[in-house]
Length: 118
Image 1 (cartoon, one colour):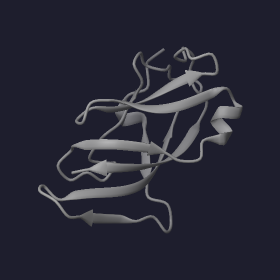
Image 2 (cartoon, rainbow, N blue to C red; image 1 turned 90 degrees about the vertical axis):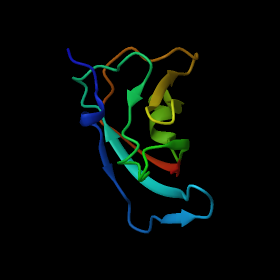
Image 3 (tube, rainbow, N blue to C red; image 1 turned 120 degrees about the horizontal axis):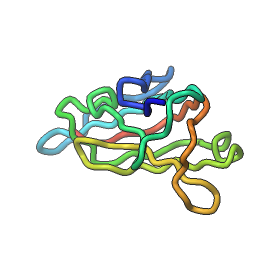
Image 4 (cartoon, rainbow, N blue to C red; image 1 turned 45 degrees about the vertical axis):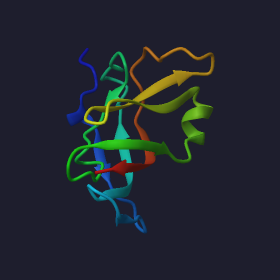
């Protein structure tokens, strides 16, 4: 089965989210974004699910950090999500309760993240 690619991830900004410009050179941005991925068919790619920095609200494609908000439902299901990757190729890594990377096809999952970068 094919692995989840960045094109298989859906992005949206929840109501009330703030996408604001911060001071600095280059100017920095913060964006609260809802990310949806998985369908129990596409497999989990080694190293994590690739994300698109531009769709995370970064106009220059550089992500400095990602904070994953309330993920209680996925933790109850046995998976915690952590940001990993590089500034231009961010990823979300799924880890089980015993600290190993998941190896199965994740069910449909929606996470709200705060991305910061430029």
